[in-house]
Length: 324
Length: 199
Image (cartoon, rainbow over all chains, first blue to last red; front, top):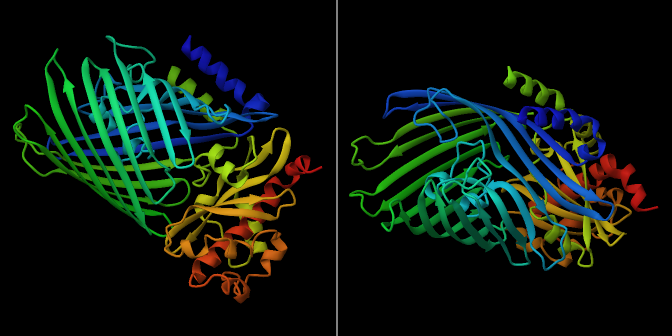
């Protein structure tokens, strides 16, 4: 049935003139090689999909827009693998962003977002990392990066905000074991050189209750950027057993003047109550945009301190991405 | 088999797919309001800047080129007060020694500069130019009139503009090149369609 609906939609797109107005479509393919030196494992992830953006308009102006990102993703010897997959060599259709944002309300009314979107929290809420090696660890810290639900957002003269209620089903538009996510971020305008934001999250995902507060900032000086996120909160993995958690990320990045070359270094600190040692990680990454379509990225993650398991994380990743 | 079928359909459904353009308004509703305070809504018109557009820019403005991020699909916004057209808004990026400078241009219905504001500019010279004294050189001017402010090298601004730019000559030249490309590309790609908003 789902296949049938997909076919009907795809076939109808080129012939449906109004829908193709103000429609942007990119074919997006990537191949990622992961060398997990600590686990002595090499894996690959291939993704091919469509990235679409459509503005809906009437004769009286724009009504809103839609973002749709559907990817066929194939794993090869990937361990550990995301909960979206069933085995280290599985392949699945993965929906990244897929939402409508209604923007035609009166001045006082927020825009209304409906669908599958990035949780409005911290740095990830204002920096798009989908399909990139660069990451701000939403999934690891909050339980998921994207979720299905409803959000309210607006850009005012001095601040912008987004608040959402989502179902906690992650890739599926449903609640699982009473899952839910309340999250929100309010911050200064995201196109300025200095951006500061405050976020909160109250969620139950995968039977883990999470509460978080965070402050994030971005400061850009010429071609340099200094970014950070500090979050405090607690997790309840068992009933009534709250464990406090502190998390911070600092990033220094540098972009070439033609924006083709980007370098970044991240320091990540995580301290969880009940664990004898904190976790300190360093990420170093570089990406080079060969032209408007082709991008090559390389990143390395190293754990600074030895964890209880005795094995420090040591991961090198290489990605080639082509957008047409 | 199912996957192959779907992917084949995905590929055939692509007609004019292009890489994403970098620069666009971060929030059209709020940012157009700054340039047209009386606007009630905006209408988007998306067009593709491709290699033929690039050639036309190079022909009209020798020594200039479009940054790779400037190729792809771009949006021109029609600022409206109910059904009345107030003017147009377009964002373009220009390379500078401080990275890309993104400028939001407000154009009147005759494609003359009405106003502009920096969306992203990480130059310390920005505060020297973000004022009416400098902007007034641009306001009310068409592509042909602004082109007279370009020096013979086709890249830098001449003394008429630099006299107004105080200690920010490099950024003044960036703003001028961005203005010229904005007016030129708007006319090339959207000119015909915009006639219906200015009968």
